[in-house]
Length: 371
Ligand code: PMP
Image (cartoon, rainbow, N blue to C red; front, side, top):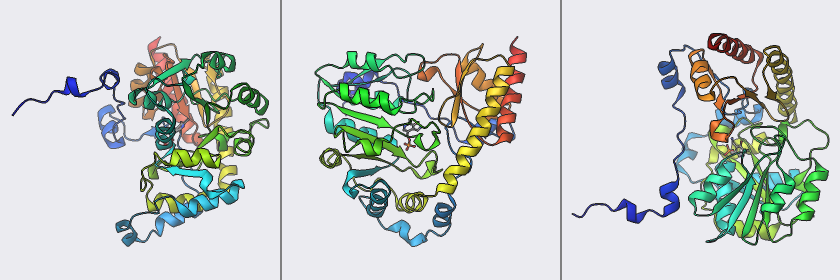
C-alpha cells in the first residue's frame, strides 16, 4: 500500500491555515482549573435564555419528530420573518447559525483571484472562511475602535466581491449610524456585495442605529445577517439567517445545502420571533451590567470600550492569555483577545449582577497578585 501524500493533496491555502481550537466542555475546564462553579462570560450568550414561547416549544418537542427531516428551507420561519420585516419569504435564507450563511455568500460570489474586504479586528469568521476557501481577505485596521470607511473604500479593487461590516462590531461595540452607512453604500458601486452582520442589533439602544432591513429596498447589493444565538438565547440550537434582495438571495441559495437547520431550532426560532418582552428585559439587565462594569473598571483604573452590544472589551496590564487562565481558577471564563489582534485585552459578556460582581472580584484579585 502506498503512503498517503497529504502534502501533495493539500492546497497551499489549507497548508497555511491553522484550525480553530474550541474550548473544552465546562466540566472538563472546571476539573482542569479546580473551580467548583463557572461563570461563562466568553461567548456573548444571553443568560436569560430563550424567550418563554421558545422554551415551551423546546419542552414540548414531540420526540418522534427527531426521526423526520426538517423543512429544507425553514418554510414557516421564513414566512414569519417576511411578515415581521414586510418582505417576501424568498428574501430570507436560514442557516445553521449565522456562521453558516457566511460560507453561502462567499461561495456564491467569489472565484479564483477574488478578494473580500473587512476590518482587522472584528468577528474573524469572514476572514477565515475566505482564506480556507482560497480567497484573499483584505483587512483594514480599525480607526478609534471603529470600522474605517475611507480605508475600506481605498482597499477595494476590481477583484473585491464582498465587503463585510460588523455593526455593531464584535468585540468593540462601535457602530456606523444610518448616515455613515448610507454614505458608504452610496460610495461603493453595486458591483460588490456589502454584508452587514447584525448579530447584536437587538441589543443596540442608540437612536441613530440604521434599519438595514428597510435599506435592502434601496441598495440591492446589501445582504444582512441576523442570528438567534445572541438576544434570542438559542445558541445551542444553531440558527441564523440572511436577508437580501430577491435575485441576490436566489443566487446565494444555490450554494446552500438543505437540511442543515434542525426541526427544533426552526420551531423554537419561530416561537421566539416577536417576543418584545424578552428584548426589553434583556436590554435592561445589559444596561445595568454595563453601568456596573463602567463604574468598577474606572475604579480599578482600567481602559475599556463599553459601547453597544452585550459585551465590554477591557485592556489589561498583563497578557490576556495569562489573565484568562488566572480568571478561570477563580471560576470566571472570559474571551482572550489576542486572536482578535487585541493583545492584552479581554472581552466580557454582560450577565446578571451576581456574575458581574464575581468577575470584578476575580479581576481585582488577579491584578493585585500581579503587581
Ligand atoms: N456574527 C457575529 C458578529 C458573531 O459574534 C457571531 C457569534 N459569535 C456570529 C456572527 C455567528 O453566530 P451564530 O453562528 O451563532 O449564529
